[in-house]
Amino acid sequence: QVQLVESGGGLVQAGGSLRLSCVASGSISGIYGVDWYRQGPGKQRDLVAGITSGGDTAYADSVKGRFTVSRANARAMNTVYLQMNNLKPEDTAVYYCYSAIRGTAYWGQGTQVTVSP
Image (cartoon, rainbow, N blue to C red; front, side, top):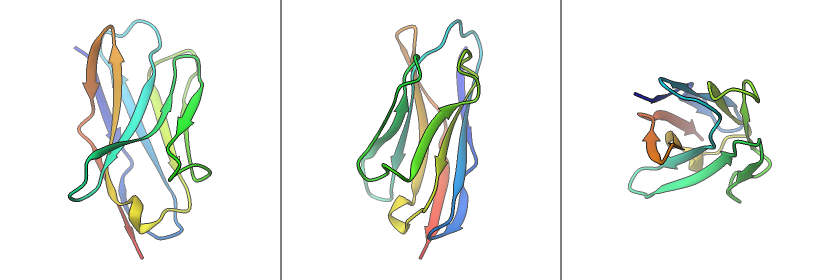
């Protein structure tokens, strides 16, 4: 059974930084792409950033230049980070990591990020 577990959320003032982690565990062979989504209060869940199995990254326009997605180990699935700098109140949301592994979609439970003005 595969599990994705996020951590690192919290309360931060505008302009501050947080680093989220997504730890994958279970029967995983190989490396898969991992995406970060977020869902603000009363909003739909939106794609924020992603990293492919080959290490290519992509970002939503709203976070480009402020967020960075990376792997702890380029050769392993274990941990993916989302470094968030210059946070804004509009970044307040529950952040989820997602990966499709061998054709099955997996979501983490989410971690709350709250940015105060």
